[in-house]
Length: 109
Image 1 (cartoon, rainbow, N blue to C red):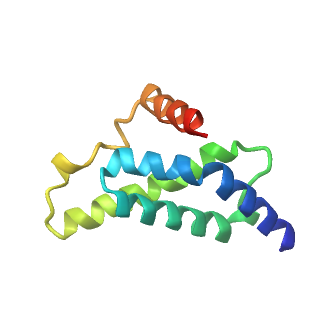
Image 2: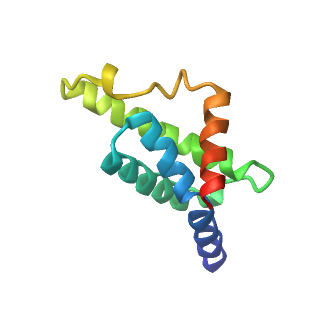
């Protein structure tokens, strides 16, 4: 359990900003991006023992973030909000756009 917390501290320090910027790009909303980032790392912490150490950590974390982004988009759709104009679709976010977000994030570090 102590070792899990060490991984979490490292991953939060290393990837929180990336997840936040990814969520902000898709959602175009700062508070929602922070909410998505928080929920992402809560889920990562809950599921850390299921993570296969041979897997790409950044990919796993971004995939988890994508889940929470889609969940937020669906929830807003259920509330009757116009999501088409507000959000970029994470499904149509091509690998080049993701790489651009990652490069911008790495330049900020």
